[in-house]
Length: 283
Image (cartoon, rainbow, N blue to C red; front, side, top):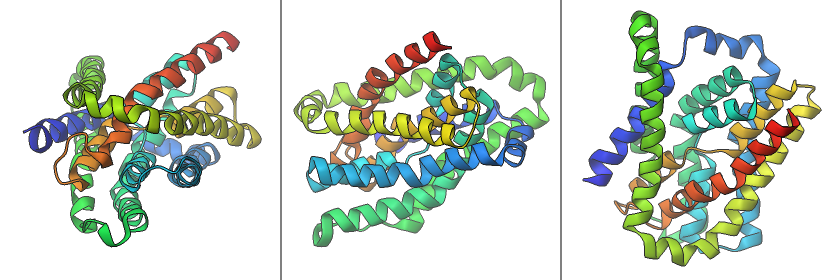
């Protein structure tokens, strides 16, 4: 019930809430600020999986947990990254554009990276990953709800504007419920693996926040744009990671493939919120 109904519907609603907040101009912004967008997208789509892969050689996780880390690393940012960007004084429009476009790209990137990670880390013991089926699932859970939200904003603008704040609040609550619900239901597994996964996830979070900011600064982006790129690079959609991990793992809500995303749902706040507070003080 949780895997087949609650998780997919919750994730779809979270992505729908992202679409409701978008207007066509948000996608046009990609063309108007190509440098900022390309740097943010490259950090998230290319650099993040590479850094995660490199850290796995340092921390030497068991193969199943390593696959879970790669699933998290190829997940796009979510509504949470947009909220955190706003709190930190970043360029919210750039953050939303990155989240939206990278979420659409995840229809292709997630199945390919997940299939590669499963084959690399598990070898002969790797479960079969239906790349086409996973791509279709990603399309149904990300692209379709985002498209529906954008359509609502385009053709029923007044309604979309009235419900936007409430929908965003519900999406945030759902994100927290997915993470906490999975942890409560699998608390023993979480506690057992926190010392194993926690250090790597904290380092990954810190490194990507720092690299995102550094690359954006090196490209001459404004302070607000640097913050947006850093947070998009460092804050991932844990609920999507749990959903994909559960699907690949054959139904375990917080099985080995989904565990990294569940633990990350906690450690991400421990790392990111102090960074946000520091950025606000500096701003």
